[in-house]
Amino acid sequence: MATWSYDSRGKVPPLSPPTCRYKYRITWDTERKRERERERERKSERERKMQCAQKWASDLMGPVKTEAFRCLFNNG
Image 1 (cartoon, rainbow, N blue to C red):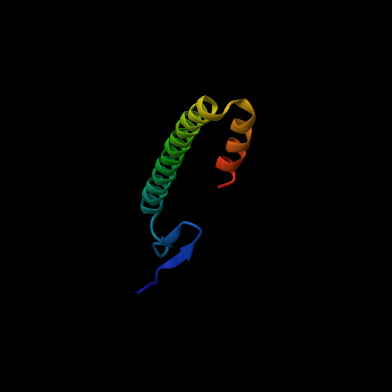
Image 2 (cartoon, rainbow, N blue to C red):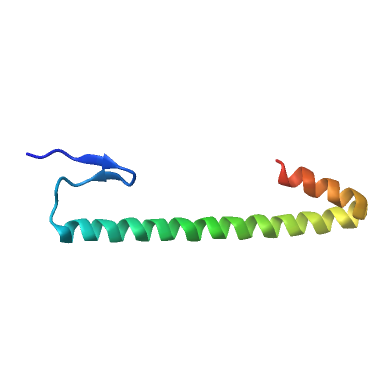
């Protein structure tokens, strides 16, 4: 019996027929696409929070301190 091998995508079936490999490839690509979409959503959420925080900071402290706040927010 053949053993499973590993590559950059993780566990790969042993010398499987092309159809099986093709299906595996499709599911892998779909997973990558989903991951990119999730990352995009996270990024937009960060942007929204950032804008809200900037508005709050500018209302509270004025424009000079807002820049310092933005720097602090971006760097952790």
